[in-house]
Length: 416
Length: 70
Image (tube, rainbow over all chains, first blue to last red; front, side):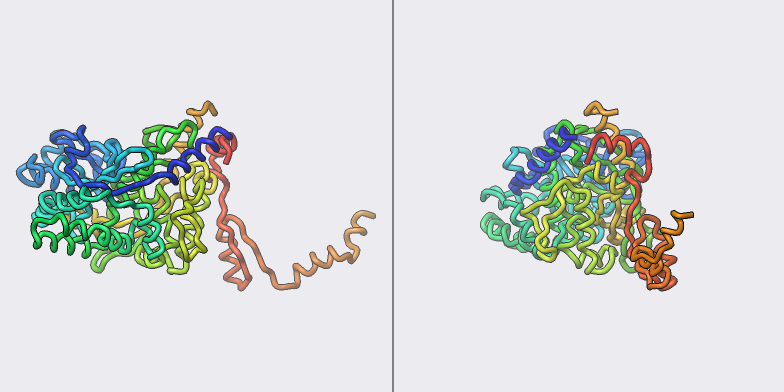
């Protein structure tokens, strides 16, 4: 259908012409004026408190205590159950968040500006590994780290970024792909490249050497620090692709631990949801599949722009880490995802695959015709609140989301 | 039975068919993987093609896909 072909060409053009730049870190209250007291933004499509999984409820209880809206975790859970908090998806406010994806008033948010289309997208700072709120962690150590991010680290990175013209991300990603990152479960190269860009400005704008050292060590000691940057970048790239009449390109994929949701350009901001699936992967010592929570987080925005599971060929080390098979099989994931993409990205290429561009623009028609669901590299949270990450794996987007989207797209272009 | 007589003549085509029954097989299996697995267990060389009907055989989705084109 020519209408759809033309619309998809426009969608891919907008993706490829994006110019995402990391420009600031500011409190969520400044970044998102619509964010109010007692509002909690979460990962994935809309979900009610009663339907939330353990880690999501745990994170909400923790963030409510952190914001001073509850005296302790029990009080927070009781208040949540009686409707004291307003829950909304990050995606409804130009934002994304990893795993549980908590965004509230005082959280420091990274700001990525897409300079081609003049839009901005936001994501919280990565907290590091181990017991963290994004995996449902909510004890005193988790809240203390959040307070340091809010009071010291976030403002320091914001000052550093504002002292220059921001950090362009497109070329940084291109280099990261050549260094073995896929930007979902492996960000070690991009985290290092970002630190190289950021460190001089951090040093120039620091007012406390001890805090500067702590900030540098925090970034340098966290291989996944860049993930949240990649997510805000992904959101900034995909938002201008929304609402192209007739386009069958996916503009968002995300999950809340209960449901998986997608949005498609031609059907606007409607969510098409289905029960989320369990990741298949490898577990940290002492944990098994019985401990795992279903798939969760807005981080699938990374796959939506052709990275993560779509760029597995760039990152053979990740194939082993997520239990996806031998390193030599990593390229098969990228080749397979090319079958459901409208194009490829000539600027984000994979040297080991003869400079194949990452698959770009997930076409729901191709997903349904081939039966190939998008492959997602993901962390695995413990199913109980407060425990944290227990492994990493691969999960597929549920086909039912794409079926619902195709029916709605057909209606939108007058096809029955 | 003139037609049958003609098909039974030892032409090059017939030799190919006969050879199928005597030469080692190299099989391409499309769709259900179980057939490939069975043959592999018997030592037959098999290349499996992972294929399923569009929309996993759902007629409504398949109809929409044909109209919306890919």
